[in-house]
Amino acid sequence: MSLLTSFRSSSDEGAVAVRSFSGGSGTNDEFRLVKWHFLAHSNTAPVGGKHPRVILITSANEGEGKSYVSHHLAANFALDPNVQLTLVDADFDNPALGSSSWMGGSSSGPGLLDYLEDHTTDHSRILMSTGLPNVKVILSGSRRDNAPELLASGRVEHLMSALAANENAFVIIDAGPVLSGGAAVLARSAGQIGFVLAANRTRRSDINQSLATLDRIAGPIDENSVGLIFN
Image 1 (tube, rainbow, N blue to C red):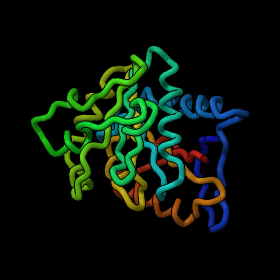
Image 2 (tube, rainbow, N blue to C red):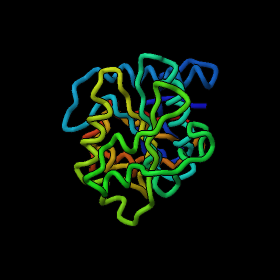
Image 3 (tube, rainbow, N blue to C red):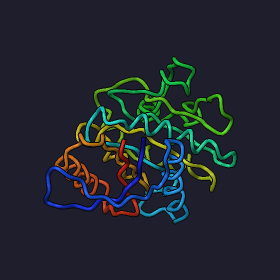
């Protein structure tokens, strides 16, 4: 179950104070409301290289359900035949897209890290088809020790700008966790961020540290650019 909320900080370590955007009673309804939240903030002009139709899904730590949220949110976006969606696997330590139902259960090939390292590679070479005509995917690519440094290159901004150039084009990035991955660097290109929390498990200190990291590296962030998604 997913629920998009805005963050209200407090000194209470054991609780997360939120304002709910959702009144839905089912998973599909809740993902639809999450989608509509992102759509409502998607018509603004890019600011500082951050494109409003580029949506980064991340979390504080591994195992909090961000890939589940990314893939189900992508499926809900895909229900609109006018939307052209690209789902990007950018969790390089735990890639989930290649073995998902989007790719028929098992797929490999060049991906994001290959594109970032090889400046002669056009982004069209890493776009892969799915069973849906309006959805493409980009795999994580061959694992590299210098993945964070590759993410810091201007190639990411160029790629996201190209993928979201059309007014009906959206990008959902399944990123690594903020506290142990390159999500904060990727957030420099994302106009909107969905921050996934494992309900009753994610610690407030991790949330605060993650949001502070996003603000410091990719900020400034506010409630128009970041929402919490309870899983």
